[in-house]
Length: 250
Ligand SMILES: Nc1ncnc2c1ncn2[C@@H]1O[C@H](COP(=O)(O)OP(=O)(O)OP(=O)(O)O)[C@@H](O)[C@H]1O
Image 1: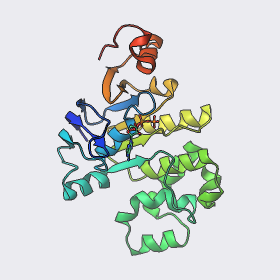
Image 2: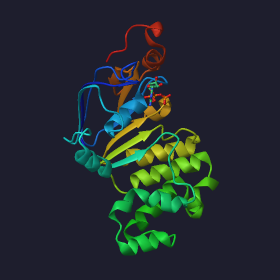
Image 3: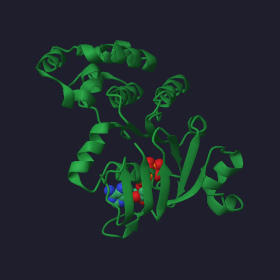
Image 4: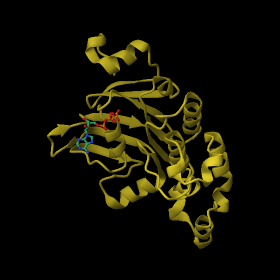
C-alpha cells in the first residue's frame, strides 16, 4: 500500500504536547523503510497515525489512497495491515499458535473455527505457519500458553501473527527489542522477505536499520534524515542533534 503524508502535525493533550511537526513523506507500495530517532521523537506516534489510532491535527494522510480518518476506510486499512506493537499485545490464556492465528480470524469459516478451538491450525494456514514458526525458532513453543513464554519468544509470536495473513502493509514497532542477535536477524529477514509488501519498522538498533534500503529518522517530530546510507556520523547527528556537527541532510 502506498503511504503518503502531507504536512502532518499531531499533538496530545489538546495541542499542549506537539509530537509530529509537518511530516511530509512518500513511501511507495512495496517499499521497505526503517524509522530511527531518539526516544520520544515520534516514531510510535507516526505508526499509530498510519493505523488511525492518532488523528492528525493538520495535514493529510492516505494509505493506499484510503483515509484513516474515515471509519469504513480505516477498517479496510486495518484488514490489510499486519502490526507488531511495542511490548506486544498477545491474548493471555491462549496458546502461541492460537495467538499467531488471530490476525486471520476475520476469514475463518465454521470448520476453521472448530480447528482453532481444538488447538490446531486451519489447513490453508498450516504450511505458512510451519515455515514462519520454524524461521522464528518458536515451533516448540506453539503449543504453550503465551504467559509461559519469554519476552523474546512472545515478540516472535507477535511477528508471526502480523505476517501470517500475508498483509499488504506491515507496521512493526521495535520488533527486535529484547531479541538476541540471531533471533533479531531472523525477525529482520522475515520482514525483508515480504516482497511487494510495504514495510515500515521502527528500531533503535542501527545494525537492524542498516539492513533496510531506506532509513527515515525523526528528531523532535521532524524528519531529519531520509536516505539509504547511514554513516556513523549521520547516526550521531540523529541522536545528538546539531551538537554533533552540521545539520543532517534531509
Ligand atoms: N497518549 C499520549 N498522551 C500524551 N503524550 C503522548 C502520548 N503518546 C505519546 N506521547 C508523547 O509523544 C512523544 C512521542 O512519543 P512516541 O511514543 O511517538 O516516541 P518514540 O519515538 O516512539 O519513542 P520510543 O523510542 O521511546 O518508543 C513523547 O514525548 C511522548 O511522551
